[in-house]
Image (cartoon, rainbow, N blue to C red):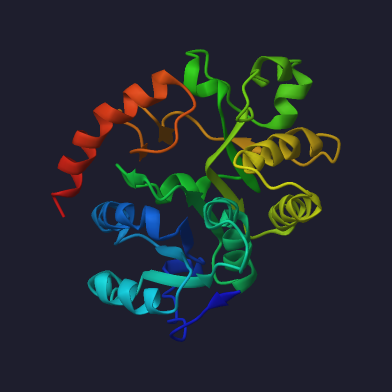
Length: 282
């Protein structure tokens, strides 16, 4: 359960009364070092947009709350940056809990009913260019990033239903243990279909007797296929939106993480220097 240390500030609505878009990230103490860069990139690129940054910090000991609040006080004082505290359940592996809590965090934000949609991305990502317009104008209730688009130049666009109708589903099902849908970034709308999808994902988690590291990607991969029969489209995020190569034209960069291939590891080593230079602007 999310621990609210302060009452939620009233979110300013922009012209037309549009609900803001919320960014969502999750980490425990081990990955907290990446939060600074992530927040700085938000201030650099999104602080004037109709967006809010919600971070969920998973803690083991109560004194961590004060430590985090003190360390990130200058960020928390901004009306569009919020840190939510979640207690790691006893006897639950903190690494797995922090990894899998991403879907619960997104559901928590959707259920507050003050955001139009929620964009989740891993804490070790930064915003390279403004992303509000892409989030605002995206018409799909749920969006994911395909691992196929990470490795191949013939980029696949559209949705799960488009792939099925064009008989291209077989192309994306890469034989890799991490799953063919990546979990480092996804977006959920605050609408009927978005709520159905995020609730279905969490339901699958609860039914899974064994919790393991790549369970999130496997469930997203199952959902991508499963909702074809329900005639509910799940959109495919483009390389220009989320990018492991840290190209200047892409919106989101991934800085460092547990990579599945030597190709990804090589990209990450180069990206760290580029990212540190970028956030120094703030």
